[in-house]
Amino acid sequence: MPKTPRPSPRKTSAIKANRARRRGLRLWQRLAVQKEKAERSERHAGLGRDPLPPGRPWLRRPSRR
Image 1: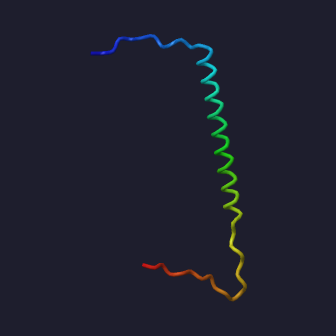
Image 2: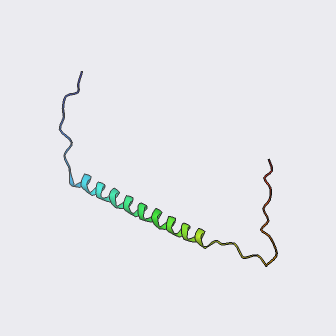
Image 3: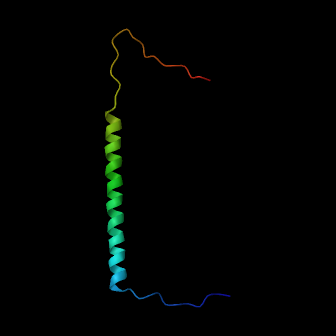
């Protein structure tokens, strides 16, 4: 049997304020994560390997399998 249609609850000022607060918090969290990711990728891009002295080959350990 289908449900009877009901009106949505009233949009009180408290409800509106809470929704706005949650929206703001989500925005701040998104921005914080974005910033953290940017810093992390920057750090990773800065990690380079020092050049080896001439005549020394790159050493690569064989896999243990």
